[in-house]
Length: 297
Image (tube, helix red, strand yellow):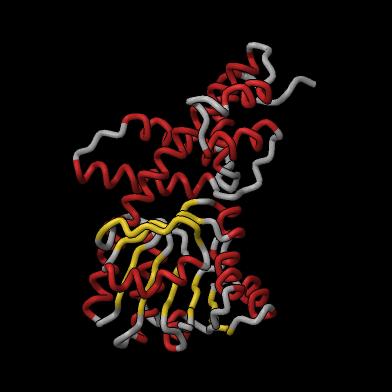
């Protein structure tokens, strides 16, 4: 089996790494924070001292990082992955970043003889823990086929969407739909609550109809129970919509509804709520309506 290097052990990266080890892969891990590294080393992973060290000891290097600048630093920067470039090395960036950055990193890898895939994911922390992520991949078919067994250890739906960058275009489309859907759920349940109707009853009444969705089923119970423990943070969704709007601007695609939800996310960041789960988007509407979505006492 291929030796895997994993860089970035946050909410998503740590459980994804665990699933690779469960599947029998030999793993070398690295993060700028020592705590998750120690945790995984105690479970049998090798300790990497830098991105370059991880790459030197791996056949496939996976990065799972907050945004494009971190991806560029880890892969292209000093002591980075490409300092260990050699024929046969494959780099897979599973972060959610701008398609333009993914294409830049892909070109740099190609020039150094390294194969590259951009492969962002959807499913949040539960999907990462349960190995049920949706993985959206951009890159060459041959490279995709080499990495497919690795993806299958972490995800349930794995799709090659096109050339490098296509994975992140697909992820941006996903993030637009999720953010707008959460905002709509918040408005609907705020209206119900303010009208004196139990939002839990409303949720159960509509979830089997046309309004039903994976977002509604996952997020409405969290909202109603006031559980905003992060599976996917507001600040990260804000970043994703920012990347979507930048991409849209470059392509002359108007995204008026996305722009509005982005303003809601910006307001929540200004209120210090960026670390909440993105279901917390509803708190923006709650403040305007002066209501808290919850069952009657």
